Amino acid sequence: MVLSHAVSNGDAYIQSAFASRHLQAPLPRFNMPENSLPKEAAYQIINDELMLDGNPRLNLASFVTTWMEPECDKLMMDAINKNYVDMDEYPVTTELQNRCVNMIARLFNAPLEESEAAVGVGTVGSSEAIMLAGLAFKRQWQNKRKAQGLPYDKPNIVTGANVQAVEMVDENTICVAAILGSTLNGEFEDVKLLNDLLLEKNKKTGWDTPIHVDAASGGFIAPFLYPELEWDFRLPLVKSINVSGHKYGLVYAGIGWAIWRSKEDLPEELIFHINYLGADQPTFTLNFSKGSSQVIAQYYQLIRLGFEGYQNVMKNCQENAMVLKAGLEKTGRFTIASKDNGVPLVAFSLKDNTLHNEFEVSEMLRRFGWIVPAYTMPADAQHVTVLRVVVREDFSRTLAERLVLDITKVLNELDHLPSKNSQGQSHHDMGKNGIIKVPKKSALETQREITDVWKKFVMARKSSKVC
Image 1 (cartoon, rainbow, N blue to C red):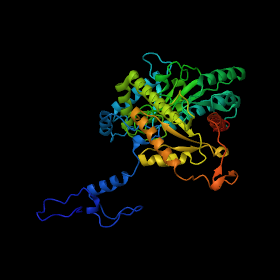
Image 2 (image 1 turned 45 degrees about the vertical axis):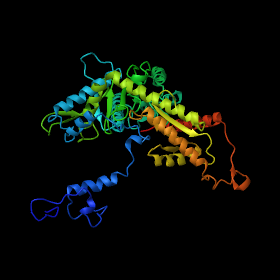
Image 3 (image 1 turned 30 degrees about the horizontal axis):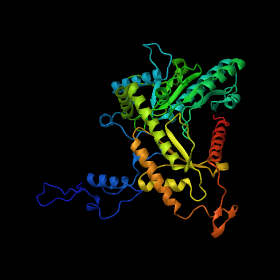
Image 4 (image 1 turned 30 degrees about the vertical axis):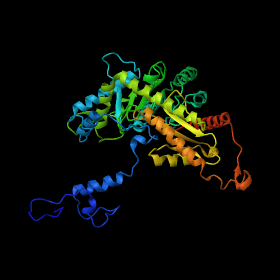
């Protein structure tokens, strides 16, 4: 099939940088086109549309890595055609995954001898890793209940690292899940407190309820910024941990890790042995085919940066978060809702949103290229909204200072615009010229209200058992 028009000499073909030179009619959006396109045209059509996407590095909503070194980019592209599941065909890639598992397990203080192999697996992210850990807990619990001749049809998981969570644990609880790095305010839950409370309860009841730590965001932060914090396998009840390599593990999206304390904590019957690709391949996954690039990229970062490099990156992120926080506080317009210790992010709320709200700030910041999300709180506190900035490796001090300047510009512009909040609020007092008068709250009152709402939201999540 001829894809372009031949010129008179019959040897060359017209090549064009812009698809409009090839297309006189629009392409169908939801049906496959009848005819082929020149490769240049297909590229240009897609590239033109993608130009309308936001800039990933200015997407401050995401925890996911948006920049890696060119050398790592090259390694990823060189391996983009390798199917990770073909372990017999790509044994070196499999070996690199095993090295990553062992490095991360030791980073999390797994009780391993010097030459002992760690137990873990690479996943497409923390969601898969959490599910695999849950399956392991469920099967362990079921096997024990069967052996004891007890019912095993109503398993549950309790979430939370506090007294209330432990009180909810019963004989059907397969594990208690703690979160190291809240996506809401960056806070680390007190896993050691949970471990101590659960040890006491297990001793009284005769149960052996274990702990899973969801360290998707905090797993690559705590070892470097808070090495004395006990949250990992140093605690005896912590049996498994998940972490996102594509967050503060500093790899592009598509890699997570599930790590178990020991081989006894991962039931053998959950491990699949596949041999149709040429050799016995043990695997524990919810997926089958997946790319090798992210595994290779994780290994690159681990050996390229080492402990020192990761620690420097995390310190820089934390310092830049403090620069941003200080700049926002200096404006006098915001209440900070996030914690200084934990995931390097800044969550903040307008002290006075009677005329303009956080959604307007978020919307207007997009004109400068920034993507800063605004979130409403649960249904009983819809009036409380926060903006949140996640500080990643590629968010420099210069960008932090620029963001504060642009936020200040937005606030100044909003101060001169009519309020969008003045409709549908007849329950407030009406002042002169039809302006709604809403009692202003002090900074302390606003902070307390935000804190109370966070607590209610977290407690609501912890009050429900997840099967």
